[in-house]
Image (cartoon, rainbow, N blue to C red):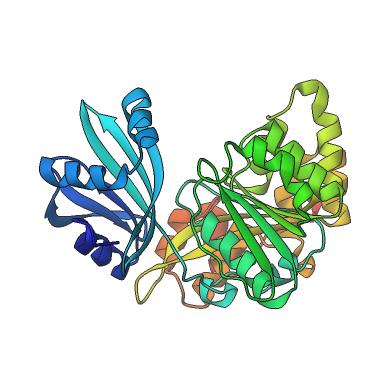
Length: 365
């Protein structure tokens, strides 16, 4: 396939570690690097946009979808650069594009900078592992590192259901199949209905969106599978409540019981600027389903989960403030950035001075 009119700007972005490109008519093409938008020198003229869209909308089906709905999602390969997930959309009567790089270079758990305990979590035979955070917090990157760790070390059949595919995996010890919504299957629901018939050991659901997707995760966990997924939540308590909100109030007691049995770990992360060398590093709250956590879920003491996490270091748990403190002490982030990102800045200020409050009384209360 010949190179497109976008070749140079895509190559520039990939070489600069960009995640996304925004192409808007008569405006500079903007790329996102380490979470920040940066304007390039290339202006997307009407001609550039039209030629790019014409090259990408290769079928009448895609053209009709754009005309009828104002959006078209597709995958695009630029020779010598890589694969991109593309959304073509209309705004103010004009056509714009948003492109995301589908990465093949997957960071290891060590390179990512998350605690080594994540490896032990990844080695679980069954249960549900949730990586949560806000949009752009690196959830997919952490999930990809976990899958790649399994891929390199265990003989498993891994099936992913994603919208869109964000990382391309190559089979190593494991066999990996990646299904993209809109290309390989119609909907999450359709894919999840059939996934258990595909003899998987590990199932990755790109995002936990609704009751149906979590029901499928519970069913897979109940039948002995390991389920990996992401969720939009800033801490473990919020993650649990987000899941409960999928269900009617009359169903929530049963779902809390199911969570108590099936949750293996909830990891909530935020990205913090590295102190040196550029880039970002994830700060991670880690909840492990210990007997104490299980009891709290069963007894609906969701508001006490954070206290159990803070006192669960021996079980591999850590609060977000504890993660920030560790990153500061290792010289990986600055105190200033840690305090900006902290859930409880006042408590972190005390921790940085060596003062720690005991959370055990809160658990017993």
